[in-house]
View (cartoon, helix red, strand yellow):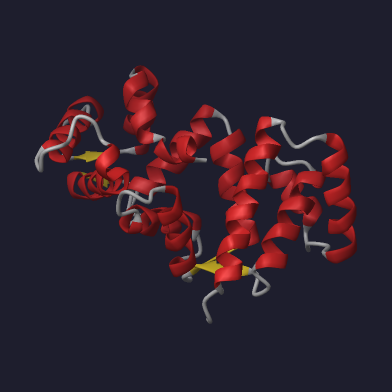
Length: 225
């Protein structure tokens, strides 16, 4: 598949900004109506009713988001290269490439190397408007790199290191090389209740619900959005 152009990258950034305004309520009704009118003329996403039923977005929101997605990326898909480029602009003082790689894989539920509009909007719906349980389940699957239903120390270490790399010089105080591993050890001590060396979904959910600091650490992507 040919990669999206720089215009596509800029367009997806605009899409994310529009989503932020939709969620925060700063996209006014008049503006929404104007964008909706243009959307209905230009694009009619297939399965809109189904997406409305499957997500926590309204029909108007889905139409606006679809217009931005399709107009700026006519191929209808975002590949990993484009996704990494977008995330790099959020974190210019660090290296976001590895975290963006893992995040891309979490959105790419079919494991075909691309994110379609349905993948994108379904994931965002969970992260931004899902229940606490749904958000934690999504985050668990982000950490479960090999998708075997468990999180092991190596997987958690890879994600935590990717997060530190992404934050770059904005981590304060400046971290030492062994700090990510120390955090992983602390997480596992709280999560791995039966000490079998892996964390199950239920162990993950319970530990996060019991520890607010841990929950914030595990839901970095939501904070970014």
